[in-house]
Length: 354
Ligand SMILES: [Zn+2]
Image 1 (cartoon, rainbow, N blue to C red):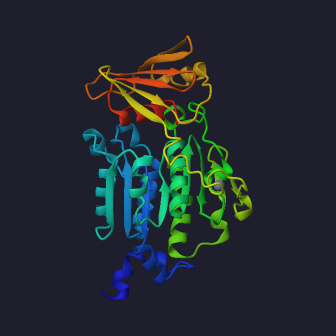
Image 2 (cartoon, rainbow, N blue to C red; image 1 turned 90 degrees about the horizontal axis):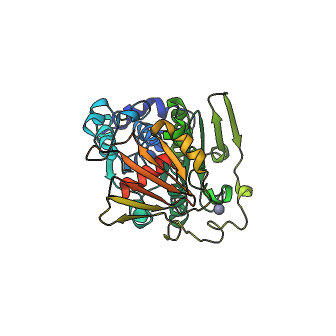
Image 3 (spheres, rainbow, N blue to C red; image 1 turned 90 degrees about the vertical axis):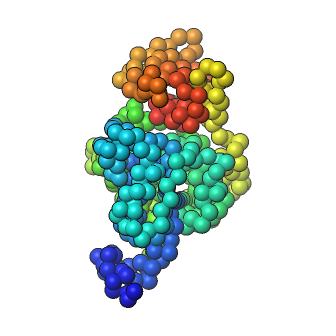
């Protein structure tokens, strides 16, 4: 195949300042690992495949639901009606966009136990997540394997993104040493999420990824970018080597607790009770009354004797019943309605927040 026809699809990108056929070839030779394929993952995958990143690995544990369609741009009404796994629907969509791209969609819970194998051969890790615990796992994974990781988050009208470049710039734990306690950070299910905020966050994150992979990365690509579309505010913070924390537990002391499994949340099936207990990795007293108020749009929750309890009316178990959620003041929770740990972990992540 001669050069013009091989690269014709990417012509408008190749003629950009800084880009070239050589830069495009570097993208085609690259492998991006996208962890989580909700709104941010969908937006990122769409940009990566259209830009010509030659190999994509997508991991997500959930199925497509109707409430996803407002912002999760790779999925259709039919996917939601049939409850297709997101990783499967995303991979199919990627093949439709560009059949020459090698894509693998894995329906799996991304955990310390499988993280290293999913990262095999990856040149960059893109954050499509909805929880902090797995972001700290990605940070550890990036440091252990020396693979750049692009942090990306969006909730409400706001978003934030920055790259973790092992041994060059700060890591996630240099900037935020500990993940927020359960129930503290807003989640999309409690606070909502504006589709354009997802697109802006993923746009910045994939810009950094593409420029890194294409070899046209500049110092400003290391910046932390945060924005609020409700006010129009956008802020850039320089993140050079001086932003590294000299005693960082992860990138300096090399204690990768989330990858080594000592800081993972635990999900344990409670035998014979159709319930799973969740023990979060971070502990801290939860404001149960505040949590009950924030969850009031999803069901009636009551607080007594150090625990909050109620039924999640917006979710249905595989048998059509509703889930019952009990959260204790130390963050421990029991999700009743399923004996599947990944199912309970999803409920906890979405409604309490990990
Ligand atoms: Zn660090």
